[in-house]
Image (cartoon, rainbow, N blue to C red; front, side, top):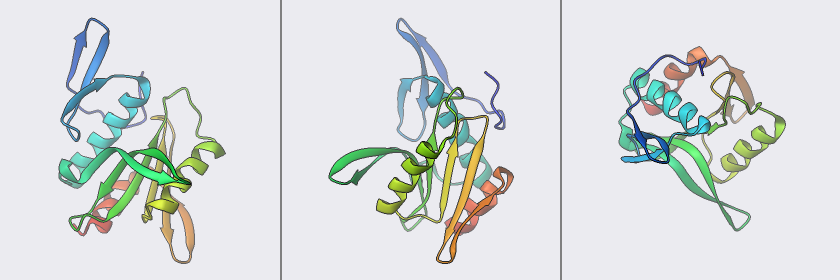
Length: 152
């Protein structure tokens, strides 16, 4: 499926039970599901366009919400190991609904960051959080905003 993301190279291999993609941040092969394809493509774009070290990207970051362990799809940290972006990914067939936004805001309550991104690979919702409220910004500005928060 063609995504509304810049093209990138993903390292993919075929196993007897399906396709796997090398997650350079987790340094392991993971099943290539539609959601994983969106995550790997988006995170490769963010890493390549910002120059952020892969070691500062946590995929499947565990957060505790109301005593339950949940997983943020991806979290980017700055060089001081402070979280600066939370990403929530869905498969291209899954619309970005209020439920998706509620999910990312729940993560944000436990892991406060200035930038939130939800994407299904076709649509991207980019949110800037500041003391005076939240505002949407275009996907095209994402690399520069991440670099600014990262201190690059």
